[in-house]
Length: 358
Image (cartoon, rainbow, N blue to C red; front, side, top):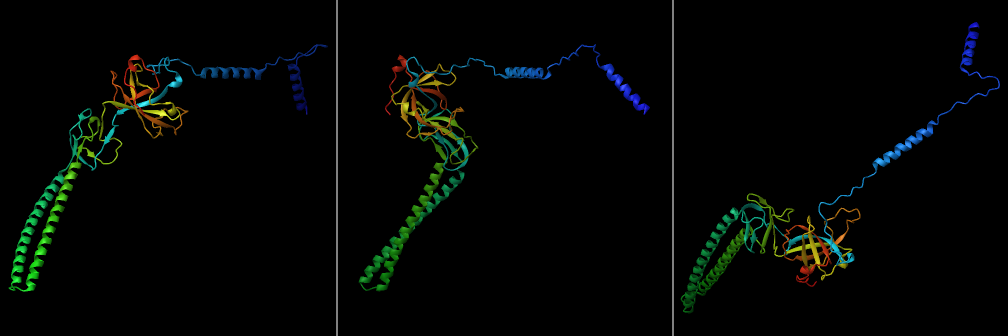
């Protein structure tokens, strides 16, 4: 009990020592409290605003490396001009050559850029098996013709015997039965001659079939034009059918044509008599004048999408064909042009022939 009392007294003395002693009649002073939560909130807000400011995109105005083509709005209003992307092609369109039968390429007579006439040999396929077959069938034709001569001689002999039998029968030298046999023999010889002649026709037809197959192994130019691309090499196996990469690309490039894709929303604004100008990609200062040729009557789905988020994948385009008026600007088949239809031309351009009728 003494120990408990001593502990309680010590605790009381400690609390009394820690408590401030105030004189009689003096009010106790309140402690100043620091507003911790508002300070933390203000600091957090400042940090957030600083982070947002740092993450704002920086708007930088850059000068393009090449000036994009723009129509001359000084003489043509913006509403009068229709823009489209044009692809340069041959005036015969680009002809992708293939082979009717597959085989190994043994000779290539032309290369890209060569000018060829219709019927010129472009390349050849291996024909050794057909050459051997041609010799065999040629021999069969000779043998069939020899059998025709034999059958013709037998028919002549049978006719002589029949004539003799008819003469002797009328004189009652031979019986009627013998006369009938001679007549049947002559008719049989005649049928054998017809059969031999038919065999000759069959052998000649088989020989002609082999020769046609040999001709199919020689690929010739269907038109007069220029070899735009050559993907065939000696020793290469040439497959048949439509190929993703054609063996050869051929077309007449004098003059060149431009196939312009015009959005269906603007198709009604394009007229045949409107002038058109094409600008070379990469140099807006180089432009070519275009002369209207025709409209493709069927509106097709758009093939080359620009990637714009507002562009629908079901967009359809009207294809207009224009002829490139010869000038000092050099363009190549397969090159893209930025085409503006309805743009006014200068005095020099206006002197060129007008567009054809639709």
